[in-house]
Amino acid sequence: MMETFREHNFARIEVQKSFCESCMCTIKEELQKIQDISNVGFCRESTMVFFNFIRANELAYALNTLTELGYPEVGELPTSKNYSTVGICGC
Image (cartoon, rainbow, N blue to C red; front, side, top):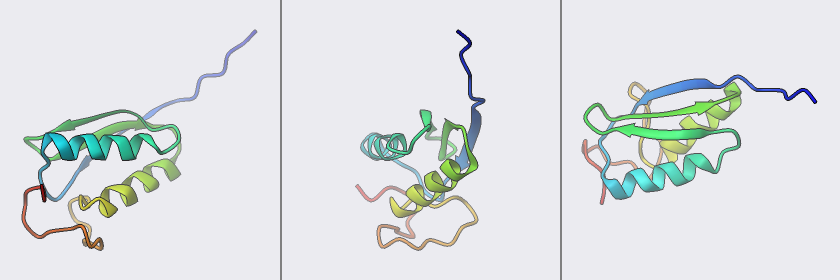
């Protein structure tokens, strides 16, 4: 029996503000709800969120999710009521 493997892509997204441990847990939980998103991780020093995905629409869902959680990508306009102009998390 031949098994089909889907190629994974890697996303590295710099967000507009930092996050604490609690915020990282929330972000990870929400991103992992998206089908075929895996290996969610963070780099707190450079405010990076990274993960594997398979299709471009999953990347779009992830970007929308980050924005709704108050962590829009650098260069994007904040649209969420959860967003604060302060460069740190809202916890």
